[in-house]
Image (tube, rainbow, N blue to C red; front, side, top):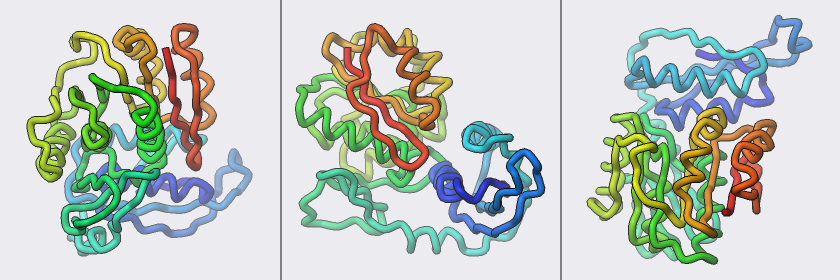
Length: 282
């Protein structure tokens, strides 16, 4: 349970769902904090089938970034109210950009004129519904339409959605890394669901151990992590290569761009709600 300003309730609920919540319930409350001027607040009840301590810490970190004074959750064990079934009925096929269609396994369709990416919602981040993933997919599509990409790297792959999208766009060699074992398990499952088992090299190897350079790198993580990774990400990008960064709040975008300058320049910034996705070029 989180209390957040009403203005960011949709973004907060989206974060919880993409981090594995089976569903969210919103209740209006009025904040009593003087610091926020008495603005309206919303209480979000998020239901998880299972939530590990590491998963909770990740959620707290992201939720704390979108609220002025942080967000401390209250945890309660409840009997499953049937959110799993409700979530499945609400997960509609989602078109993104001009070519992608994100679908759950139970809504798999045939004969679509879009590139279908099958994603099973799990505890790994990335179903396409969060603005940061949506922005990254749009920039990814635009880059691959105008550039030849022989080798790509997805850092913090989560559900594997970006790596799978790269394969659908014809990238022949893809490395996807994540330090979270649960995320890698979900990513590999999604690769199987898309019929590309073994086509993407999923790995728990840290970025520092990845060899070679890449035509395209995606990293949808957190702005603080992106800034810390800047030297290693720049070192692994080939000349004229593209780097797509996301998981960045609007107010953080300029700071992230500065961390990658002057070696890389920002050629496109895409804003979706409170989030920014950056396309950097060497």
